[in-house]
Amino acid sequence: MDPIRVVQLSDLHFSTKPGGYMLRDTAETFGAVADQVRDEAPDLVVVTGDIANEGKTDEYELAGDALAALGLPVHCLAGNHDFVDPLHAVLPRPDVAVQRSLRLGNWVFLFGDSNRDGGDHHPETGWTDHEDRVDIARGGLTRQETTWLRRQLDLGEAEHAMLWLHHPPGGKGMFEQPGFDDEIRELFGAATPIRAISAGHEHAGVSRDVAGVPSHVCPSTGVSIDFDALLLMPPGYRRFTFHDDGRIDTEIVWLDDDRWNDRWKLPEWVAEYFAGQMTDDEMKARVAEGR
Ligand SMILES: [Fe+2]
Ligand SMILES: [Fe+2]
Image (tube, rainbow, N blue to C red; front, side):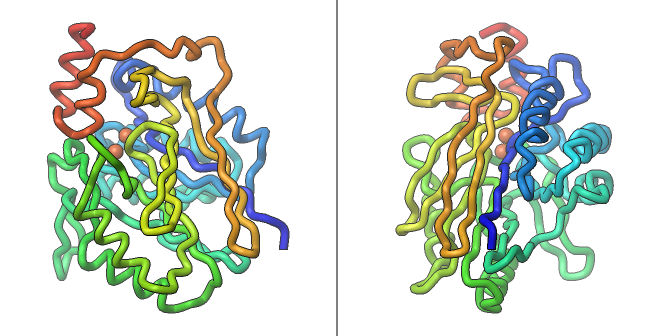
């Protein structure tokens, strides 16, 4: 079987407000990323959440149109900035799906929900989002989500599994998430078919190790940051190649475009915001003050 080529996009933060999200017009940056991805023509595009900035219907209309214009099969999952009902009602198109698993050759792709604290399960009505889920930076798996993921893995329908999430496990320092990391480790078990995890949320391009399984983070198509040097990075994404023997190649692609190549030094508070130590409203106030 030919290798499966996938492009991961994350943290699109589509907004209908003037000025977009933080420092950039996210529809414009997404358009530039989309032009490049369309030319690459991967087999699949995976979008790992924060598709909208405020989880609003009109943001999903914009995002759905932009994703459909890729002309490629697209699979999406929700981040903390997404609200599940409007996302499911408005985003899907003939080529833009929100289904939770996908079989490709001897691979199964699982699209997990890491927004444990972003809402509640109800026996009769399903899932309800919390109003403040945008400000909940920490990831986690609900009991129901862990059960679902285990069940998918136990089915054993594919030799190799790839787990896509919004929140990345395995972070250190300000991105450390002890409870979440333990949940992920428990999920692996002794003979996990999970070959890697890839997520977004941190708006950075890094890779780590969680109990021997690679855990990748995909840059944002809008605002990405090099947290070591505290530099604003160009819009970016990740390329993946999945081989039928379970090997995965991945690399980060930063857009080479004069509009976003400045790599500005950022103020310290930006790191606080991404670590969940500042609400979205406080962040917007700082941006408005130019600090
Ligand atoms: Fe985000
Ligand atoms: Fe996020």
